[in-house]
Length: 322
Ligand SMILES: C[S@@+](CC[C@H](N)C(=O)[O-])C[C@H]1O[C@@H](n2cnc3c(N)ncnc32)[C@H](O)[C@@H]1O
Image (cartoon, rainbow, N blue to C red; front, side, top):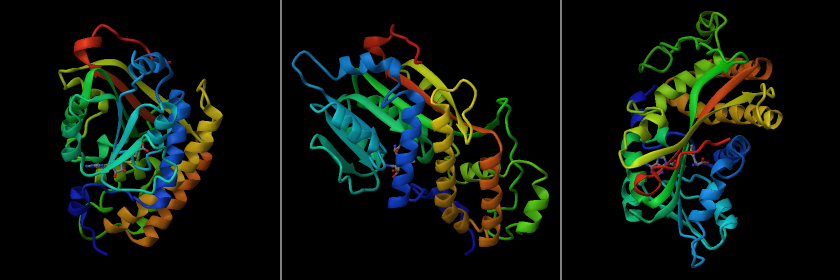
């Protein structure tokens, strides 16, 4: 089917929302947990405990914004059984494992977030900013949901790839591939033009360009632009793919799980590439090289996390995570 790249770019959310994708999000959740040391970075455990345990034994409100399978939210609800944990998302899922203190609210974030203004102790928003049309407005709305002293935990993946020496891995140019409504390159041309460059980096480059808002900025910048937020910590994690990395905590497990996740991600993204005008043959060629590369080369992916809070109360508290 011919590409309609503009339609894809304008869709509210482009990735699949089926059970398979929810399983992949579960895998991705394990990656985040291994990277940051649990449901939130180990360095903020005390702050989270303080926020969620007031003198009267109330635990307050936790929001998981763009919760997907709600794996983070339901785990928070189990850990803080007196907190009210709310998952917000465009798409509903089964949530069969959810405890009673978890509630799901379906809807677009632009409409649902203002209902929580000033009410949330902890707001978590992971791998969402790159999928919304206006990422800066999202971060502003998130900041407004915080009660004084509340913490925003914003996390996102980075679409760049690094080798084992932390050198940027260049994608080859996927010009012609899905950028117009016609004439997608033939696999044979694509193979020749790859010129030994990275198929894996190229897929991320292509897919990121197709699905991210043109206004997307790294989350560190998005947070900096909101006056009422103070950055408590900002951390970039390097995640090894199919190797343990060098000096990376939980590297062995991360390397193994990242390989599975990145394979599943390719499968989930295929449908969008088809809609964008790629032929089945081309995707087959691309997939073969992509998998061979993450199985045999030492590759790293970057992910970022920023912790910010409502500045009135804790502006002087800055701490390091890890
Ligand atoms: C990549 S998933 C991440 C899910 C979850 N935060 C996690 O880390 O496992 C992004 C989620 O954001 C949701 N989403 C994207 N745009 C949205 C919007 N405008 N309003 C509500 N949810 C949205 C999608 O439905 C999807 O479940």
